[in-house]
Image 1: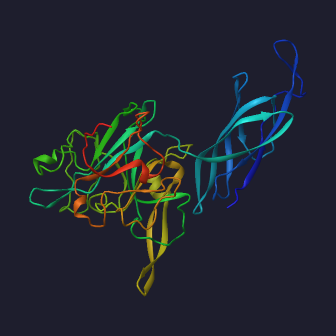
Image 2: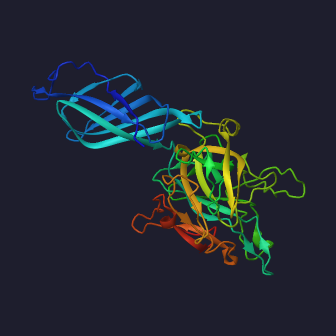
Image 3: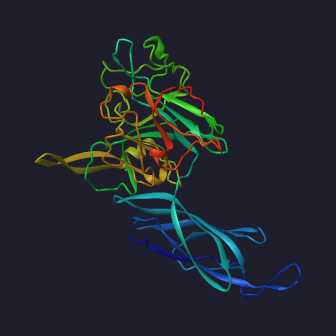
Length: 412
């Protein structure tokens, strides 16, 4: 699809003549008039861009200047000294997602741009997540076996690492599970995958914004039940030292979650089950870290479940039988996602349930569907030997070690 082009320029700064300025030697400086066009991200409709900041860095002098504009709707222009520049743009974009207004942050840039005389510049833009740096380092969801060979659950966990070079605050970071399964393709309508991930369950780390700092390279352990599971099943793990546990009130008194009062609970946003949330033990869903933040304001869980709820239909086909099915879930804008991972048995993927821009591959906790060897297995992100950072190319097939032995205390 061709990108819609919103034409704009950069505001003049009381510079009227192309040689109105002088350098330190008193010689006149030649000026360049620049016009800028902005290409909005693909598949975006009814877009308006506001609160624009354009930054010019002169690569010869090292001087950096910022120019701010309320909108990019009217033709604007700027004069700047001729030279070689890096040009970047950041702004707020409002657009339609399944007929609902959504706001996100966009960025765009070009390097080594020669500005001489009159120049027209076109910047491609992309959605920018407001906060970046956290990644899923290890995910264990398949459960364990007891010495007697019985299935044991409740010991699922996520390891999340600050993969950046600065201290980040985990307050408000969310974990979402997809509504769709990677082993069962659904031709659903409306198809919003290029703009949003369809999710059914979500939990959020609490906090006031500066309550839970995570230093570079450090991790958080988030689990189902923060207890020493080895006391019940010696083949499981001691998760009593977890940083957070997910807990939500059950509507069925026969299915309740233990609650460790010494471990903070995640804030439930919504969950697919009316009782407990157990991540899909066969490993056939996708998971995402995201913020309920549109670049302008924080969205409350209540607002999210109200404003981002949507209905869809899909065609169920089995041999010669087919029928239209109905479903409901929630739209998580792709621009809010920090990290995403698709899971599937190694021999069983049918489709990605995220846009490829979020993740274009699969990681696996099992070789085949209903694999009896999946118990005790996790996916673990690989480490770059040179930088010692976790590898994150948005391709889970390459970024993760599949079917690794789970260890909540693994040292990366």
